[in-house]
Image (cartoon, rainbow, N blue to C red):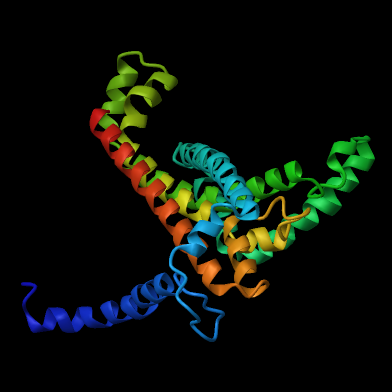
Length: 286
């Protein structure tokens, strides 16, 4: 179908209209408001780059950005490692493959808020009971420190997203040509050698997709952060999305929060695009 046909644009119009109203228009308005003293009701005076200058000296915002970065790096590695491991397990010749696929994917179907409260109960009640039973104080009072709160968020996110990422790896693993693997087996290649020199290079495109999804989801995390730790103790586990939300709706600094959101969007976009570019080049080299 030629792009100049009227029917083409008629079918495309609802999508373009929705995209414009939901994404483009709010983004343009938000960019404009970030240069003003907008309080959520009135635009206020034009302040130029003052909001952007202020956020680079805002320790709370910078601390939340650093915490989010550490969380994202650790979570991306764990989620992809666990997801690929699960995919290798369920694509092997085992009888319970279908059941395992469903079981591993199920956590992704549960809402983030509910998951946060579930894991909060596990960390605070179950861990404490186990710690008392075996005499391990380290298992008690979880989520009460920055370190345990950090690993609690990592565990929650990895448990939720690993099954979703597993599905992506399964799609690529099941598309591998069996002839190559069988030829490697005949030549005496070990399991590790087959994975390193055949399977891994052929599923490289899956890493590009999976890393993009995990990076964007971990950086933008909010609901799990809210229900699990609520940013505590003393805002030490507060991620950027929550910090921006509190700036807008607790401090009523809507223009300042919008400036933070713009900077956060640019950071996430740059990191995501750079990793896609690097992984695409590695795919060619492999």
